Length: 236
Image (cartoon, rainbow, N blue to C red):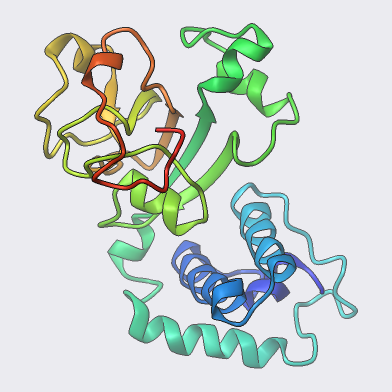
């Protein structure tokens, strides 16, 4: 299928805005519900993750320069669609995408880790965790953390989507996440860097968060059942 850049239809020097717009376009095209296949959908996700994680190469390309048959057209299409889909790559908002490094709280017990470990994310990076449990993705300006996760194919816990429950709570380990609406978190929880992913947006270029912390002390009683908000997330 070619390099990750070929899969997304972008040049190897594409900036964050171009990568993000191309991924959104391709993941919709590849989704089984839109005429794609599960294999193609996973390939698009893997390509995006490789680029964001800095692991992408162009070795699979026959010319090594990203100009495979149809690749230029795909890249041009991505650029053309990008003009309508969002800000110009060189604009300030395109440059403002934040990089989020995330970790699922549920894996901490399995590995004997603690939320307060100074090297928690370093240990996670070396543990060969599945991408659903650990990795990185970009958050575009105007996206909440939860929206960004969902737009990239992840299924994080939530219920109300309005800052009125703790189902979507995350622990911010590094960086800052906004608190535009909070009707549930106490000052103690906020001081402990607990935030709500459904309304919070990154305030720093880089962010490290632990998601799925809804069962932590102080949060359990602040949760809501998924119904009537969304019965689809049975793990909430």
